[in-house]
Image (tube, rainbow, N blue to C red; front, side):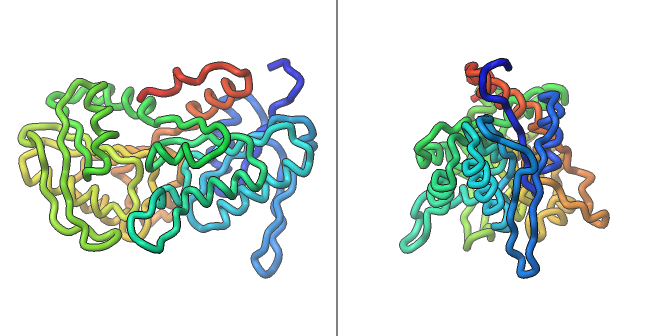
Length: 316
């Protein structure tokens, strides 16, 4: 790393736990920054060291509340105004990604708005993992490094040494993602078909494919209320599956999610640390295994900074 622009890595507050692991993986110190919070809730981030002429990476997942996104925008703006050479937003979980199209009249396209906000703040590049829809990359007018957690999940799946594996998509929308796993592992694909009564509420569900006697891995990009994934798991077990596990990159886990996972017939739920799990000691997280994306992002940060190809970081 001996070209003219030094590299500096900073973190916003919500993703500090992950940023520390990324910095450790890069054998670097996290940059010094602070946030002043006013009594009305307004806040102002500031860098406590010079970033002039530096390539600045700012790490923050944009899960709710909106403050997390806004803090990232303010940090990007602060870096630009402090004469940073390039500002790169590392957004392991890209929030508002489910609003990627007008699926009914008179709704916002939140993912495009967030892309515009990042651009307006002065962002030069974005790094993210497992976008809800690949086409969101097209909403940006600057480079997007889109990595897949499959490069972490596939080696873990192989360590389980399960026989008779089938990969399952919990809904039709996830069929493409699940199909990529089934192709790489050379195993059959099952698609669960659900009818939604309304947002976050699942009606009936059925499975297309051979279920009986199989160890099934459900694949999704995120688990939010866990309604779909637990309903799919229970339905697959009722149809004669030997076991059902779930793999999902982003553990959004809102509302009754933790309780649903604990009570479901899922053997295990494998997620990444793009979003932190609850710190409540009374919540049952015994079925949840977390695999860190820190080294994956550290590798991509290192390659981007050194102008190297990152295609090896993409499994799909």
